[in-house]
Length: 381
Length: 155
Image (tube, rainbow over all chains, first blue to last red; front, side, top):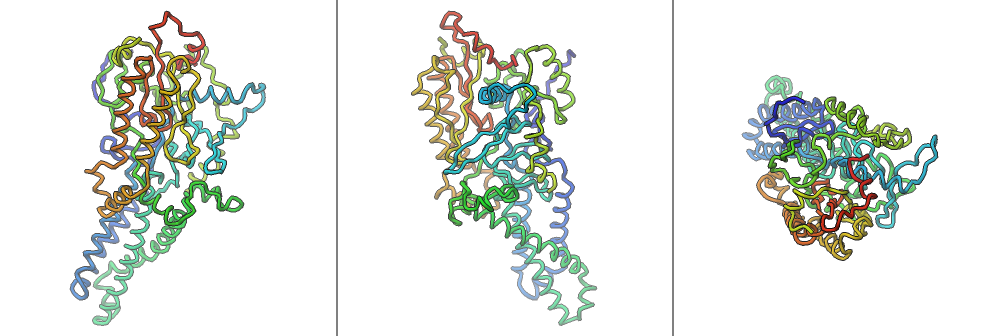
């Protein structure tokens, strides 16, 4: 072992598994692919800049100065909602630490009994009854937990997310329990902003054409054409999306459940999470409590030395046995294991002859994430 | 018997951890099962653990209540584009602080003297209530060998 002492304080976000990127020392959390998010930013800021540059001076003088003022407020609100959706933790469930994972494995083995060799182990499912409806909780092989109801594993971010709605590339993040209302308000206010800019573009062109003629108007404000084009296409998709999510909220369903048809068709009217009242459902989703993040990103990692450093993180006296860096790596190395952890896992395995994971812990085709319909849909989105 | 948390932390060795799972029978609200784990049979009285779990559950109900105060908080925050959350503590966060204080107090008064330690569920993603079981040095080397097979690192 090298004698070099690492004295830099390591924050927990640096060791979190999953495919997220973090900025501002753990305060900002996003997905890995951010290209489309930058496109979203460019389109919104670009179109609004053109509006403020070309249309607003004319409209402020000839109609009312309230028009640009309201546009500015709407724009700022849209940006605030977009950044909140993109930068916040959607409700990621941290992976199980080894002790918890082992405990669950033991419970599963006890429940399954003896599986004859050569036979595939039964799928890992727990049934719970919620409001007189049986809900199946699936086991996540990556996170080593039984997913809570409505949670789902996002294969793009490689995390289980609570109340998973969908992974949105336009905002560069998953949409889940913690940021769904910001996402909804973003789609709603962006629709309003698009309609607003589109409408006032038309008004501006009409008013100016009366004075100067249509072609001269376009020559003087070339930005108008671009704005109208962008707004026209954005309008239909945003209004449609807002309408769809309004429908989902009134039924207290997630996009994920809607796609899988969990509570439609022959299961219609059996959603156990719905209050059967549109107002109550809307209030719960939009005005419910703001859930805190359970992912401790900015806490300090404990030093992996015998004299444990006095860390400011919350976990100051648990895990006296566990090694901090290894707790975040899966017990079985898979394609997501960071390369520097693999040798230590191999060393652990070879030194412990009792370390025989049951075959069911390897990914059986029946319940592996890749064959799971929900994750393949999340990939396609 | 242990005098306090500090003693236990430094001198005791961990035997096993017991996990109390979430109770989803009432939906997705945060609630823990009050079923008593068999491993703690001779370590703590049922009533005490049940009382702790019930109190925790009532704290979570208070935090997640959808009512007048949460609407007010939601509407006010929305009107300010949620910027107010940068300076204000939400009700949920306030309750979480109370919970953390409660767990600390329970550990000091009830669990540490019995060689147990509760971990705040927020540190485990609100999935489980983890109870660490430490070797009971008060009794003469009586840790049954069966408990060592469930020791975390031995798999």
